[in-house]
Length: 286
Ligand SMILES: [Zn+2]
Image (cartoon, rainbow, N blue to C red; front, side, top):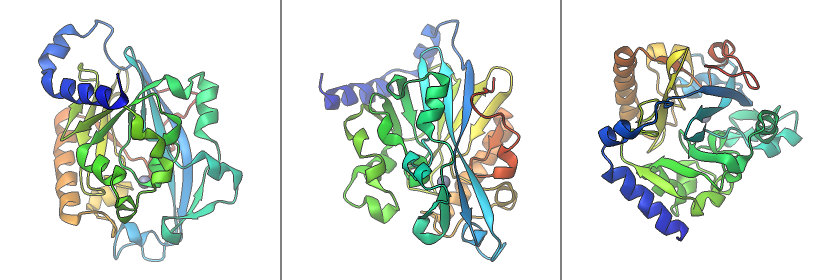
């Protein structure tokens, strides 16, 4: 079957199969086994107030950045792909985000996967929080994966105006032929409730976050860039360059209610102080 045909079948399947039916047929071994949190770059700004208008003006800050590799009985799922591995050749960093960030990649994603014995072609499921280049940096490695994206983000990223959305198609162009499940809202990836994509628009047109039910740690919500730092979360600050400010605020309110309901912990990708407490690959979290 052609890639397009496969993609179509997948989209139809995702629409046609009621979640209850999937759950009824889920194997007894269903559920996430473990997750590897990989450091996927470190970016520094000299003025963090671009992410909190009017607050912390002129203050520098370092952003952590991560890729999250999830082991499920149905296969490997990768959430986000970090800064581009090519940046590792420049230990002092390169300029990014229109000069607002100094972008570094101390250890490549490819080398971390190798250390874990996971071939990029063995990644069966690829989900990206959004298509900004600090999340799509190594997307081109994963041409065998089925892509899970909000339809609006997909159309923006693969349409003629990708640059207007601050996307860099060179980082993900090889995914054009991948099978894709285009979403319009939340999606239970494995049908057992263990990994659920949450639609969280605002930072970009089709931004999404990921609920992961870890066997020992419990439920965690991987933020993507629905918020960048703990202090911005507490004060519900919206970065100046978000796609839609009002939608960003509505998303944060909805996610606050969702966290209360699910008792999930918010793991903020770019918050270095918070992320330092999470074990990194090759160790795993369970
Ligand atoms: Zn980001």
